[in-house]
Figure 1 (cartoon, rainbow, N blue to C red):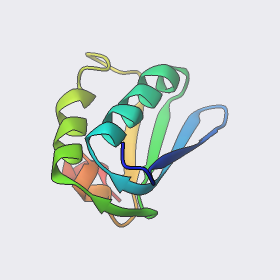
Figure 2 (cartoon, rainbow, N blue to C red; figure 1 turned 60 degrees about the vertical axis):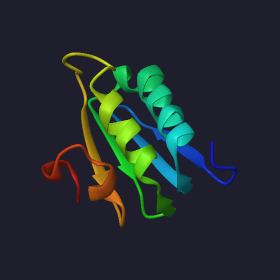
Figure 3 (cartoon, rainbow, N blue to C red; figure 1 turned 135 degrees about the vertical axis):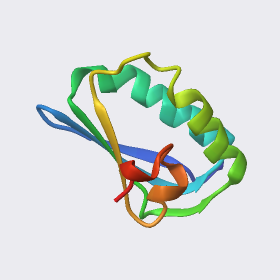
Figure 4 (spheres, rainbow, N blue to C red; figure 1 turned 90 degrees about the horizontal axis):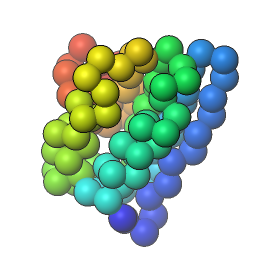
Length: 97
């Protein structure tokens, strides 16, 4: 994992907010996927905030996109990406704001 990467987590009754900080590489992608796997099942919406990312490495982006669908065939939650790097991470353009 990029030594400067971290995820700040905030959860309320129906939403999970994940603020990504630092550089997003392959290990960072797996860390994000693991947080989603462990915590997203308890909420309706997941917001991934990307404005605090310094850089998105292509391998990290592709790793995340490739394995996001592995979390659940039909997740009960909706994922939305916000911030400067939202469209780089979102698997579909309609999910980035």
